[in-house]
Image 1 (cartoon, rainbow, N blue to C red):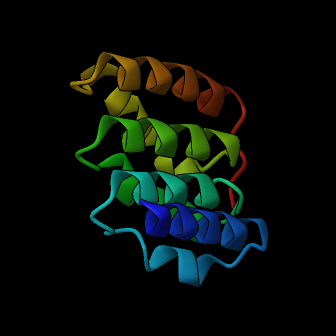
Image 2 (cartoon, rainbow, N blue to C red):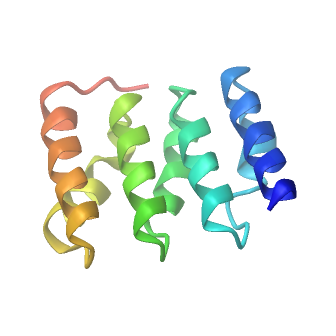
Amino acid sequence: MAREDALRDKILKLGSKKKLAPILKYLDNPSDDVRMAVAMALGMIPTYDSGMGLIELLRDPSPIVRATAINSASEIHAKNCEEYIRKLAFADPDPNAREVAKRAFEKLKDNVITY
């Protein structure tokens, strides 16, 4: 657990420094907590490529990872994630993720910045 905590801290620090490439290496980490940190870190980097990384996390099997990715995409106004979030708003199997997606979709469709 301590190793996972250190890895999450490292990923978030990379996000604050806008270091996209090292963050993307953790997209397929087996830990939900680590992938959630990746989603948060990508939400600190408002670029097309970070949006593309978030798309992968929007398809994650973990509802908490999907919800975090939805929030991050909304925060950086990732136009390339809009259609995925719209689908999740109506079809995500997790009710919490669906609700987060509905709010994020409303925010994205009203306030979109393209890269």
